[in-house]
Length: 203
Image (tube, rainbow, N blue to C red; front, side, top):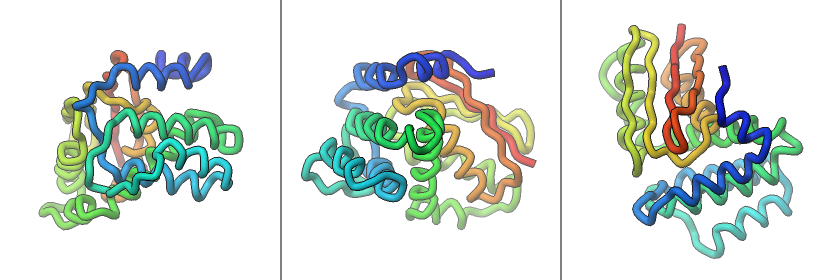
């Protein structure tokens, strides 16, 4: 069952994301890799005009993957990317899903992702331990916790998360796939303005 995020998206998704920016503080930051992956997605799925508008959000700065930047910059860039791509790629929710997926591709190709692949353990044990480690080392704000409901099912709870639920659903599906999970499933649920949870499982 979808929740209030879907209603907000249908009525005014832009206002919903702008509200997320209003809730952020100067201490809330995001790694440059997530901004760079967003820009790469626009470069591959959009046109020159779309890319130019997204680059204007960033100004002239060159973003480094493992440097922290204000999370408001990531939200603003994501908002601009959704505006530019949604008409051609299935609407705002689908674009957010794609942006999350591409962010996860970049993450799993990075040194952090490579380290996850070389962790000890196999199969379900490897997937379970890696999921917890990935969200622990890549989050620079808020809290992330995993409650396991079985060997192949858990609930990831995010507190003070500044990206919309479809973004995280896309990212989690990609991460699970790259960790070797078969037929992964992710279902998000909004708990509050900055809080959400994700019921995930695989076969």
